[in-house]
Image 1 (cartoon, rainbow, N blue to C red):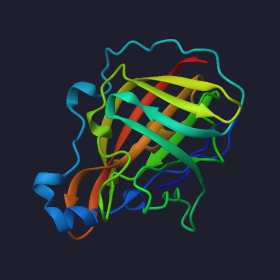
Image 2 (cartoon, one colour):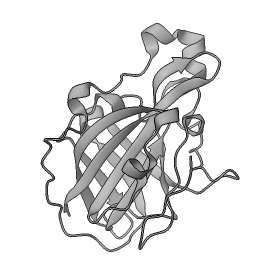
Image 3 (tube, rainbow, N blue to C red):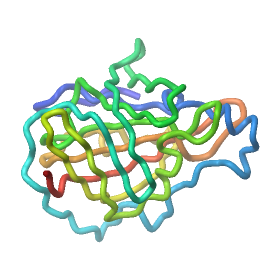
Image 4 (cartoon, rainbow, N blue to C red):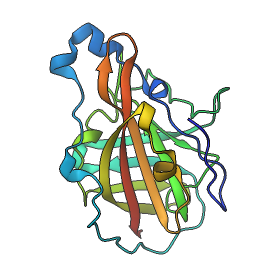
Length: 209
């Protein structure tokens, strides 16, 4: 997937399905019973969704931790760059409770589109974003920032896309308010190539502390 430009911020890299693990655990434990949950159609964007106003943007500050209480996520964040093909690097696979953020782009809470990505599983079992597909609109995401502030986001939608139809502009495009994307693998699963798509959470800033 190509890199799309976010005016006023660094380029945001598209995340490919291979970057977020290929399902070795599913191969060893049985995909039918252990496949990660996928978003329901009720949590997707609709034409009738009201665009809620966001809280004032925060100054740039690197994030250190992400919390999603509804799915029991409380994980440290590591910085991610781009690999040789121009796609977002994956976080290390060994720590199951670790996510990453694209550190050349928007910081969470700053005006624009910030990106956090993490594995759905690793060779030992479910990883940090295994339950991301169960998240619902209105759920809260909190990001601890290095300046001591906490950026609080509200989930607008949770969707799943096949890799071949991944909407780069919709997911990574420029935003006039502080927005967050949280991404992991999802969609259909192939024993030969792994996950065929991505689960994407769309959220916007609603407060800080």
